[in-house]
Length: 413
Image (tube, rainbow, N blue to C red):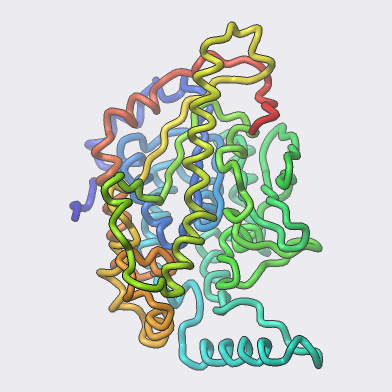
């Protein structure tokens, strides 16, 4: 466990406030992916960053799934980076399961009965369709409050765009209607892009966009935006770094919630015998939401390596982009086992029925474990992991741009 860090406004951090070097660095893009409750780990990293650079400028913010919630608050907060992160830490520290979805026995029981009736009805007789395993009305109310939405609109984003603090925000969603990945963007001087099975669309961000980006498939109900229904943005986002690249980021800081197991750890069985549903769900969710960032980062690093060997005039509009990926030093799924007993009784009963106690690393559980003690532990871990890489992070933040050419219209991103 780590001790509570100094406030970003404490005298010890005054020097970093006036650091002129931070105003001469190229456009920084912040990429935050999914993982449900695991997104609290991202907040821990941001807490360290805000303590070290309270006036840091992050003009490009992108998010998908639960990372979209963090991105929305950072982009819409009226204060400095340090103040925005302070509020983000505060809301995650007080978040509970009950503020994300209803966990009372009548609500869960009623939804369960409707699912059973729908399965047994054969789809006849005008059966009322079930729209998720849980009711996420509490999350909508919570986000409307903490994001200070006005008639659903995140007005703080336009405020920061007008001040020049923010260049663009992107929230990725997956359309159940068309099967495409759709990234919603809002910013200055933007251009839409289209790639196979993914595209962008300019919009004015609302709570609906945040809800859609973070709607875990089947578990959370789909969200209607316009004429389409959307779910979690991590499902079809084959290139998680792509939105930041398209929006013009010259440096990208990506925060993953995926623990990178060693070769020895990968050989240790997570479950004995036939895998329970919780193990299958965990593997599925990891492959859908977390693994793609690693593949995309590898592609970018290889592309950078190739471009470095070419003269600027022969790069055909491609540009070099600095990348730093941060990830947990421990398995967040295994960590979830320690906090599972504190879940609300009814919800704990249902998750155990899926076999969360039969696997050593219940990744599925770690994504829905919105328990204050678990979330605080993730925040502390993210802060400590960032502190351990302080020199590397400091050098990255202060670094100038890699020699860049072209307009960033890379057909591969």
